[in-house]
Image 1 (tube, one colour):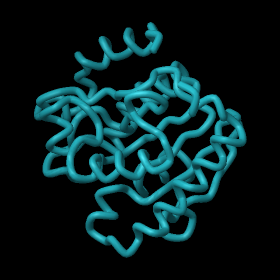
Image 2 (tube, helix red, strand yellow):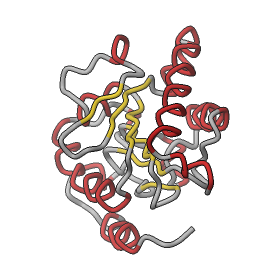
Image 3 (cartoon, helix red, strand yellow):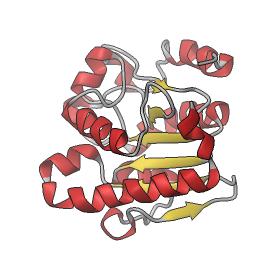
Length: 195
């Protein structure tokens, strides 16, 4: 996997960020992980406790479920996707990031998106989707739908893996969304599976 210098430079800057109060309680900045030249990027809302301790997004129980779902459609953070969060530091008690925290941190995410230059962005959960796709996004009714924005990227919102752990009844719908994602990748970025 070739190195993306823009991402590496951005990570160095982000690791010393103190733009909002979350910097005071973090153990690690959770910048992002995966193929920095991927055609598919997953974005969550913010790190939880395990992510804060390990410095990597989606490594707790929700992340393990996400990895299993990705594996079913032959995607992996180790080879053909990139994963990041809207905010890079853990909000206390895993609360949702507040609007000011998102506003202070979203520039890093925008720079990540620009550097990775994905064809598809998948928003993991409601918080990411309302901030990235549309403020009135409803994950319960709009999950699995593709939205094209002026930047030419296709966006999809899906159930957050942690929400699926709390409500396993949504797992079949969530997996169906991942199959739709696989089909769309094969249509617009088939070489994703050749890496």
